[in-house]
Length: 279
Ligand SMILES: C[S@@+](CC[C@H](N)C(=O)[O-])C[C@H]1O[C@@H](n2cnc3c(N)ncnc32)[C@H](O)[C@@H]1O
View 1 (cartoon, protein in one colour):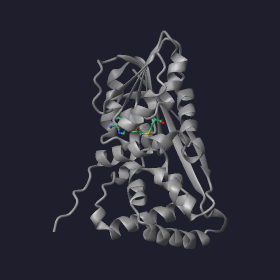
View 2 (cartoon, protein in one colour):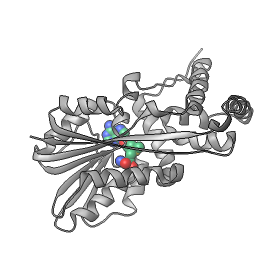
View 3 (cartoon, helix red, strand yellow):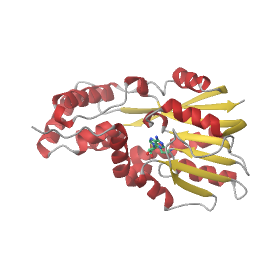
View 4 (spheres, helix red, strand yellow):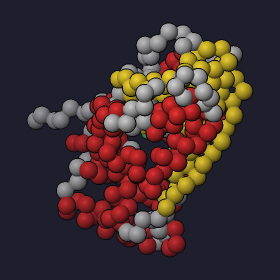
């Protein structure tokens, strides 16, 4: 009997971001826009600076950087998902260049940039530590890295329940053979973990900020549609469901959420921001 080969993490990730690219900027009441604005405010780009935006996606952070560094400055945005880069390139300011490149292997000389940003990308990298070390290498002395990362530990009871159901679905359907990042990855957005990661690759004077936002879809159908955008694993499971499985899932959700009273269908999205300096 032949089985489908398991996609590797990178294939699963690129498939997700390729499909999700047209909806990315507006997902969850514009959560990605808000997070990008906060990251750029923390990074504080100034006119004439040269910046690199790693995991630039649709360019939300890249364009804001470009506006701030102005015509004397420049921004390079790099990413590995063609669909995200395609959306980004639809609005390319004159001082921006987008390149297909993994954050773990940057093709830039040492000390080439004043500022590196990584908006909500760290937890998706195949090797997060290598990407941080590369950011450190391409920054000049005194240059800075601004990172944002989702903080999973602040999930609501409704999210916990939902992800338990998804986990069960993954185990019950071994033919789907979906890869997932190790659990350590889920803690990257905890302030103490992110701080430690930055110090360990050589950054100094690390400062942390946080943001919590959220919402409450009206019903199980809206909830499932929203959660498709929550990451490659929920996307792979939810977008391949037939109508009968989908009805069963929504029924189970209605039942579980019914027990949570006013916390039914409530979700949080929390983000940790970190700024570190290179010696
Ligand atoms: C959640 S999006 C963030 C997009 C943008 N930085 C923002 O703040 O809105 C994560 C992005 O990281 C990219 N990515 C994932 N792994 C990567 C890697 N190894 N190297 C470069 N980009 C990567 C994905 O393709 C995706 O576009």
